[in-house]
Image 1 (spheres, rainbow, N blue to C red):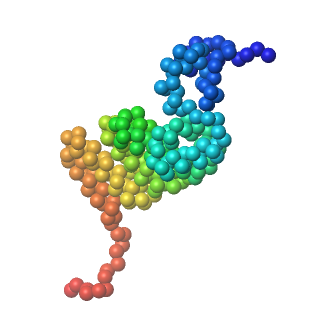
Image 2 (cartoon, one colour):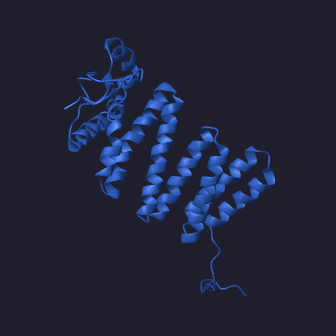
Image 3 (cartoon, rainbow, N blue to C red):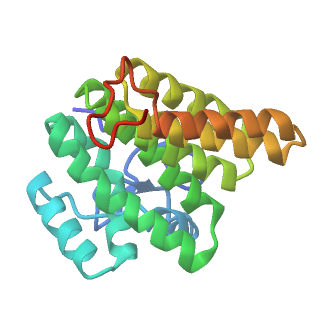
Amino acid sequence: MAASTVSCANCGKQGVGFQCCSVCKKASYCGAECQKAGWKRHKKTCAPPLPVSDVMARVRAADAAGDWREVLRWEGRLAEVMATATLATCLVVLKPFRQAHDLASSATGSTHHALSAVRLREQRVEILGKMERFRDQGEAICIVATDLVAAGKDEEARVLYERARNIGAAHGFFSVECRACHGLGALARSEGRAEEGLDLMRNALAAVNPPTLNPKPSTLNPQP
């Protein structure tokens, strides 16, 4: 049986008989020089072909120890783990990777890690929607929007704040509506639209203190 053609993980050259990485057994290299040159990139995802249960055990242990480097070492298996998990378990699985990217961002100042954390939060948003946990989804959307503002992506943040505002209004989640209005107001004021920003802030306040329908008169200390 003829050997399969593979591509070098460093230079892209195709051929047969390439040497596989001795750790992950996945990446192939056309020679020692390419393997050495590609290690800096490959080491970020290189991990032994362990069963999913063992992968998550190592991730949990590293997360408990605050070892974000070890957690991220296993990120290449995240999609595989998620594919075998229930929606509720997916939320649990995402958390250590999201926290690891947050820690890495703080430690290194890397934009890559900050945006990776946002990407994982966006996955959480969609899972919460599928689970119909709309209050949690609205709150999570606002968190993602705040991260996007910090990254200078105001337009993307505005779309998400509007989405959260609609969720809050549709389901009567005043805290979500308030948070979204506050975010939209802050964006408007930062862009020089002060009056619009103040209106949105007032909307946020109204969301926190919604008007009572058909209030009953108090029987305590009645006024003349």
